[in-house]
Amino acid sequence: MYFITFTRKMGAGGSEIAWNVATQLGYSFYDTLAIENAAREMGFAKDATEVEEKGPSLFARFFSSKELEVHLNRLNSVVYELASRGSAVFLGRGSHVLLRGLGLHVRVTASQKTRVQNLVARGLQEEAALKAMHRSDHEREAFTKFAFGVDWDNPELYDIVLNMDHLTVDLAVDTVFHTARSEEIKARSVDAASVLSMLALRRRAEAALVEAGFSMNNLSLFVSGPGRVRLTGFTRTQSRAAKAGDVVRGVRGVESVDSEIHTVPIEAYYPPH
Image (cartoon, rainbow, N blue to C red):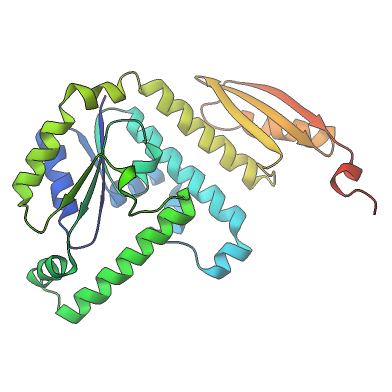
């Protein structure tokens, strides 16, 4: 199976390029809507609607960090699970970070002038186009920074950066098409299915632990094989340690849990002054 991820600036034509590449290669195509639909099918409808491609507000950062972590982990698990189903093109949702090291990663950009011209051609007024572009750029940049801790504009995250100021959509599609079929790129995705399934399982299990009130600062979770989870770390009581194991056992896809959680007296958390 093989993967191509696209990130794009609004008005640069990235969505059209990504769709055409997927069609020509015969790959599944997953944009934001398709990923949200898949999330609903997997029982993560709320997570898909709560997480938009923008950073959380200051209020959400301060008061809802646990909830946001749960939503992000589950949504990321959806991307991994979709990727495990076969060759695909992903558009946005941090797929270029989640699938780093697998497949081909493409960035589609253009100057402000070109982007405005494209948006005006679609029926927007110039002022409205500028506002929409700036809002979109800010939200996508903030989302990527918050969710993955990386700079959306960093060219080192991509194999190809397409500047659409002087490229046609057809030429851009051909460039990606031929690069994706090269042996060098295809070799990056060999035997990826089992790895992706395990990554998806880890995200779901971590989300379940956080939702149950556990901190991943104190626990570490490893997926050692299909369906096999290993828990390490520490909790205040043996009952908490047992509960962590039970929470993970209840996650879809988990077949066995090897728990090596140690108990630490509460004094270790709050030592006397």
